[in-house]
Amino acid sequence: MTNGATRAVLVTGASSGIGNATARYLAERGCLVYGTVRSEKAAAELRAIPSVVPVRCDVTKADEIASAVRAVTEAGRGLYGLVNNAGLGELGMISTWTDAELYHMFDVNVFGPFRMTNAFLPLLLEAKGRIVNIGSQGGMLSKNYYGPYTMTKHALESYTETLRVELEPYGVLASVVQPGGVATNIGAASHAGTVARFQRAQPPFREEAQQILGFLTAPAPEPSTAEEVAADNVAAESETNRKPSSPAIVAEAVYDALFSPAPRLRYLVGTRWEGDRVLNALVAKLLDENANPKHDYSRDELVALLDRHIAARGAGAN
Ligand SMILES: NC(=O)c1ccc[n+]([C@@H]2O[C@H](COP(=O)([O-])OP(=O)(O)OC[C@H]3O[C@@H](n4cnc5c(N)ncnc54)[C@H](OP(=O)(O)O)[C@@H]3O)[C@@H](O)[C@H]2O)c1
Image (cartoon, rainbow, N blue to C red):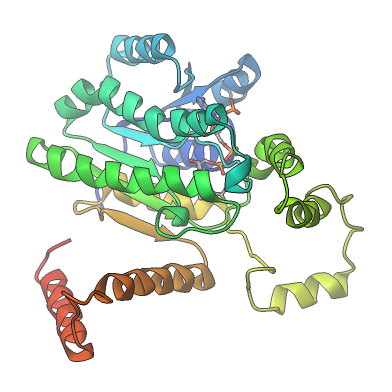
């Protein structure tokens, strides 16, 4: 792996969670990190970290993006890496979303990376650099109550593939990192909007929404006993017993996407249980596509198809 020392990388949404962990991780490994923030408090916190420079920027605001480009350009270190991390994680039954809420979700999660990438592209082309989009396993599968979130992350998948094929001939490589559940501020940041949408549910969805609201608004549970914590630690992960990962594992994948000589297009990050869930969803999609009267491979043909792709990877395709 190439040493990231002296490279300049911009991370959006560096005030908390994955963005903050990534900014620290990159700075500790020698990068100059520009971390975008939206408040003076967050800027002051970043300023205290060696080799991290806060940059005020809301990814939905063209004027703030333009001044971020000016600040980075004037700093004179160019820009090797752009990590499009800033994002919202609001939930709710699909019928309860307003146009404005859906638009805002896309504005931050999809148009944000699109605007930032276009704005910084001249610097990235000059550096023959890298773009890393923080997607989600929700870019590969869909789930009740996660609709708009997974819609934005599916869009980010396609966007990243487009960047990869269009920019690779010009020396810039794009990747998408797809975390599963990560322990961050995302749930708290989206709580009010999520609760409002479940409260808005109309018949016949109201009863189901009330059940979800019961979980969402329940008082914090009593602290677990040591025995309960131990039992929970050994219990297998499941839909109702999730084991969120540390943001550090996302930062590691981002580092590889930035500095590996051959970065992957996709980095699936998370627990084994989550990985199984994604692969099962992809196989189910493959079989849906194959359940087509005019185009259906037999089992043997499907296995041969898989073998051909595995062989092509072995030969260096990605
Ligand atoms: N946590 C997970 O389980 C998980 C799983 C898969 C993918 N992800 C993805 O990881 C990324 C980071 O999420 P996180 O979990 O670290 O959440 P987080 O702790 O809530 O951090 C989100 C960051 O995005 C910033 N942000 C929000 N709206 C913005 C805007 N309009 N312009 C600029 N910055 C904005 C926030 O800044 P403020 O502090 O100013 O609000 C914050 O720094 C997101 O793209 C998310 O979809 C998270």
